[in-house]
Amino acid sequence: MKKDDVFYNAMLARDPRFDGKFFVGVKTTGIYCRPICPAKPKRENVEFFSNHLAAEQAGYRPCLRCRPESAPHSPAWIGKSALVRRAIKMIDKIETLEFNEDQFAELFGVSARHLRRLFIEEVGKTPKQLSFENRLNLSRQLISETALPITEVAFAAGFNSIRRFNDAFKERFKKSPSEIRRKPVKDKSTLTIRLSYRPPFDFNGLLHFYRSHAVGHLEWFEEGLMHRIIEVSGKVGQITLSDLPDESCIKLEIDFPDTTALHTIISRVRSLLDLDSDPVIIANVLETDKDMKALLKKHPGIRLPSSWDPFEVVVAAILGQVVSVERGRALVNDLIELAGSDSGLLRDGKSVRLFPTPAQVIKADLKSLKTTTRRKETLVALSKALINGDLSLEPAQDVDSFVEKTLGIPGIGPWTASYMALKALRHTDAFPATDLIIARAIAEHPKTKFESFSPWRGYVAALLWREYSQVLKKAGRKK
Image 1 (cartoon, rainbow, N blue to C red):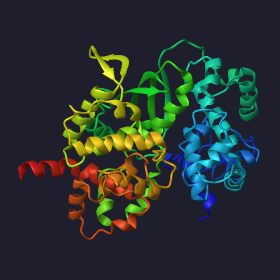
Image 2 (tube, rainbow, N blue to C red):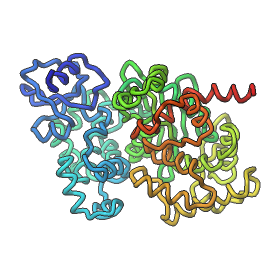
Image 3 (cartoon, rainbow, N blue to C red):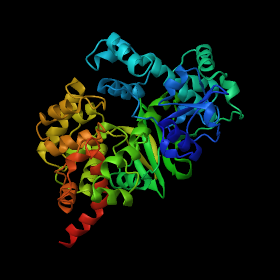
Image 4 (spheres, rainbow, N blue to C red):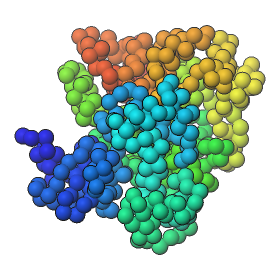
């Protein structure tokens, strides 16, 4: 069967596992759709594209019904070179629309001209053009799914001029913002939007992990719900996350005072829940081993857990060395109370403190923190390295270089460095083999070749934690 015929059959089935992995251009209408779109054009009237940029370069405009810009991102198309892939990850995290391309290119050790050339060759757009398009995509989602006034939508998308926003929006979507919105505007303090993912999706597994590693009083949980107090650019709000499995998306409720932070909030939530993971590609590698295949069948759609902020991960990793999860969580809570600032929000009638910044950790009196002197010194040394620029927690950096730098900080060993690479940088091939639970789990699978799972060994670690954390805890208590 030809590749295009496979795409057409997937389109007819409206299989959400292929959402964002290819797009359908309809020749008779001039629009392009996601494979899950309800429309079912005839085979001779369609052509297929590996990404939405290619569809637009061919002259197609995005469908108003299925909204291609809201599909899960596909890591398969974002560039052939590692440099371009790293740069695209950074673009998604940039908080301003008007970023400096020269400074951006310096992050990767190349000139802006060279980076633009690579982007044109591999993606078809420059970094700034791609960032501009991402912001327009966000604006359309806000117009379609929320009651935000269009003026606020423009600001949330990074535009300072309403006229410029209207012109850019109409050029991209062939309709004005008011033509896209078909519902009356109502003033609501809480925004609700949907973030797509490719099923299967182990939302309960993520919830279980985050509940057992809850960050102070900033996170709390109900059945099927995760609540989190967040801080962005000095302002504080709250988000609530829940799963809508029938729609293959996460329901994100945002209560935040500044709409210009929405792009950052959405980007962080996508990372927090690993929404752009492709479970089919990962399963194709892991299922070559019968033991891993059995675990995947038991826990389909495994995702990489991390945290709202990477600094929380590295601090928890240091305080959690050679102690139980419960003890590590208690130490993190104590540090928050010692060094964190008041959020201005109350929970159960009590003031909630924010997670401390590196500067606050350095200034804090850590004498009463009930951990070893070496770990306190490690916390301060790591915080200084981050402030001085000697160390970065940006996920797009070279991971080997990051591990080498962290190992140079007294008190950080191979387990901690590998754990940080996995959870803070979200490196999919990091594998903390000396972790207590993983080491015990590996002993249960002595014949399995864990090196063969590269570059998805991070998901193997997540799978082993998911399967063995409770089993091995109980075994340890019995012993």
